[in-house]
Image 1 (cartoon, rainbow over the protein chains, first blue to last red):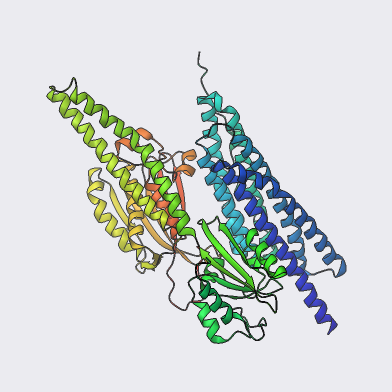
Image 2 (cartoon, rainbow over the protein chains, first blue to last red; image 1 turned 135 degrees about the vertical axis):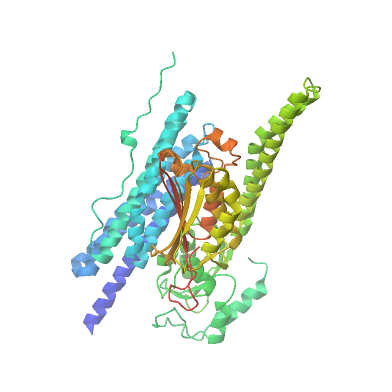
Length: 239
Length: 389
């Protein structure tokens, strides 16, 4: 009788953990969306709100870690319960990083919005939407314990990289055409890099979810397509 | 939302059960104490409605709410189903304090949706009623209008300026020059045609975007649509001696869709393949069934790929292809009479159909545009309750 009670209490604790992760996920999604919108729509108020949202995510991460540790200490879980507990800790960490990146995007948006508008923000908005979509799908996959959906997200990682590559070259060309835009373009570049990293964190979460459900790992060779570290634009000096 | 207080009071009365207890039954959250008649009434209401218990579990979600969530709640906690912080906070506050709240929130992906939510709690126990109202159509309508005006005025400026200039020239020093007159009139005709096509495409795009959040209601046979598109475009293909070929199994299953939009989608893709194909080249359209990605509300899909053996698209240009007015080669696109909106239209149609689009291209070899569309499953199949939009 008391064993049943322990089992139920334990599974409720696991469920509460999953619920906290979902909440963290929701906050990260909202903060990221607000930050990207702050850039795309030149909405400084939205961006300022996004800067502030970071602290709640951090608090939730600490909460998740505390509860997971209690779970592990009081009644060491086995098999899927163990994987779920560890997954919660890992995912909380990824989501905290996403919150941080969103805050940085929002900060730059505030600076960017003081300068004249750049037309490249549409490409950036598209990239932001791709990353947000990845995040939503992977968080849904986590809640639904759906390994296939997680794998689908994992496979799509290359798409954000492709968009980033394209945007990178666009920005370099833009800066060359008009050096007065170098300041704004550089901020956009950092924002784009942050978005790409958010996409990477979503892919990390996908790997964790897959392992949690299947007790198996997605291939070590992740579909990476970011070539910007080997991209150079050659321009003739105008003499 | 508060226009109709009597509806709300009727609902409240219908919702007050003798004793609300979460049932342990699978296959749907159910309130043991809720009279079946009330359940039936609530089930088919057009507005999404759910009942959340004091522990955060969704005890009941009507059909419209299950569409919003994208899955059956199965007595799960509401935070696992809907993550929007504003909504979760409101539910928590109403649960704790019992106050009635009215908020607005939006869900940005896959298609942006806006809702207003009305939350209230029963007096005796912490049972919160969440009633949503879909504001998406109104918000989209405002956005689309603004976009249309901005796009139209920007893109029409150049051809209009050209026509204006020629009119001035014809009234001025070219007035008696018959040769110049003929030449200029030809150019003006081309520009007028361009402006007409631009407005048509812009209106198309606006119309499609307005309805992007509305699930398609029809069932469509893609092989038939492709054959129709071939028939319509074969005169154009003949000019460059391009062969159009359809590769499909004999029993292509139908997809969920809006016929007119899918016709436009394939016409745009095949037209592009012909436009940018090489002389004497080939356009292949391949249809086949693929297993779904398994996300919320996605089962098996039909893949339709349009491949050409033209010059291909540079790698960097691929992510931008569906951007409004984006052209890989501006001069070439203008010559071919393109508006720069064809692929933007395709993208929004794909979005509405809850599908996906991918592009594969190699310079010198050609391009393949692949669309994935959900199959129309027969009634009563267990592919999940509804599809998430």
